[in-house]
Every structure is written in structure tokens, then in C-alpha cells.
Image (cartoon, rainbow, N blue to C red):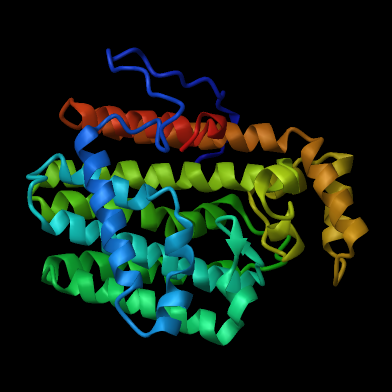
Amino acid sequence: MTPGLARAGTDMRLPDEGEPEASGDRPRPWLTCIQVEHDLRQVESGLQALVGASDPLVDEVCGQLLRAGGKLMRPALLLLGAQFGDPARPVAIRMAVAMELMHVATLYHDDIVDLATMRRGVASANARWGNKLAAFGGAFLLSKAIETFASAGDDVNAVVSEAVHRVWNGQMREMESVKALDIDEARLFSVIEQKTAAFFELPCELGALVCGATTSVRASLAAYGRNLGVAFQLIDDVMDIATDKAEFGKEPGIDLREGVYTLPVLYTLHSGTPEGRRLREILARPDLNGEDAQEALALVRCTGSLARTSGTATCFAQRAIVYARRLPNGDARRSLLRLADAVVQPATGI
């Protein structure tokens, strides 16, 4: 991750490829592939069928987030990857369901760790039932995901296992760096690639794998997903600091308060400015009170670090576009290009 990335601009309008304009009324305006929209409805049906398949309490706890709905971005990525092979293979729908189950299971875990009270506009499982039941709920969803992945054979198991290990390793490395004021960019990007980008790379590659796409297509899709995931995380980090609670749905600066220093914070700390030195002084305190946290957020907001991080995110989105352009032309590729554009422009909707 070269320092030059941070100095890139933010203009990345896509050239017109003749695709129709997406409707703002659609839940996924970037998705132009009608077949994938149809397949996602089957994924939603599969997820809802799971909710009613077990003990009533299990169904209630485990269905908490499934019923609340979501963007289904990872299942969509998997199904788009499948379009470059034989998308008619029914295994693609099963893998897309498993992908969302695994993703939702991680959200249960994240909410427990972060002591979150809201998720997807509803009370989080841990806030509603306590950490024990929430942990069991997440474990149940993960077990169902693994069971489904296992049914697809050794190659799928190998790819999924590697991705899960990378995510775990990224989480551990992030924990090791809590309150580390001198963490460098290389380590931070390594954590992002493992903790977040691995779960964007996995569905892209997995869809191509289970539907028989070529090795070169699999490689391009994996690289696309990896770079898209980094861009997604960086924009999320910008919004965590720049957006107020009413807009973002949660208290701003949660990572900073917990000692997890994201790229905008690092840029400010390393800026050599009075604001950077003051931020370092505040963050060096054993505990931050509310006033300290507000001042720290204000310092990051006033130094240009948010715009610089957005520029870096755009560089990763542009890298994703480069890999997407290596894929065969069609609605699937156009959707991937639109998504890379939308990720760094959250107002357009993803």
C-alpha cells in the first residue's frame, strides 16, 4: 500500500458503456443484472425458510437480523461471480445463502464485542437477549453456513476455510494494535485486507468456482473483491467520524473511543501539525471521557484527513475497476463496475 495512494484525487466517474440508468427506487441501484436480482429473491426465501426450521427460541434469536433484512451485498457478489461460468447450477443459490448466514453470524459476534445496542434498525440480539443467547445465535448461523458450504465439496471448503482464517487473523491483529499510536499504514492495510476484504473476495471467487469459470476469471474476480473490500472499509471509517448519529445510526467515533485507530486518525497523527500533536496527547490518556472523544473527533475532521482517506478509498475502487474490466462484457461486469463506483459515493446507494 504505497503512500502515493493517499494523494490521489476522488474523481472516478465511469465512462458510459451504454448501460441503462439505474433507478433510485431499487434497493440495489448498482445491480443491472436481472438474473441476479431474480436469484437474490430465492436467496431471501432460503434465509426465511431457515428461520422457521428449528426450536422457537432458536428461530427467534437467530432470525433477528435475517428478518430485519440487509443489503445482501455478499450474496449478490457471489451470484455475479457465477454469471461468468454456468449460473444455472443450483449450487450458486445455496452458496449465496451460506455466504449471508456467515456474514450475519459475524455481525452477532461484532455486536457482542462492541456492546452494540442496534443493528439494521432494530435492537441487537445481545441487547435484547444478552450476550450468551446472542453468542449461541451467531454460532448456530455459522454452523448452518459451514454445513451448507461443506455440501459443495473439498475445493469450496478449502477456499472458505482460508477466508475464515484470514478474517480471524485480521481481528486478532487489530486487537493487538488497540491504542497503538505508532501503528503504521502497512500494518493497518494488512488488517483491513484480512478482516474486511477477505469477506468481499470470498463471494466473488466462490461464485466463479462453483459455476466453473476459468482460472483467470476467478483471479480477476478475487482481486476485484479484495480491492472493493478495502475501499468499502475506508469509506466506512470516514463515515464513522464524519457523520452524526442521526445519519449513521450509531454514535460517531466508536473505533476511536475503543482505541482502534483507523486511517483518518493515522493521517492526522502523522500530519506533523498542531492538531496532530494535540490528538496524540489526547489519545495517550489512559481513558477518554466524552469531552476528550469529541475534541479528538473534531481534530480529525479539521485536518483534511477524511478527504485524504476518501481519496485512498477511490484508488482501491479504481483498482477494483481495472480487474472488473478484464472480465467478459455483459450485465454482470456492468454491475461490478457500478458497485465500485457506488462504494465510494455512499449517497448513491449500495
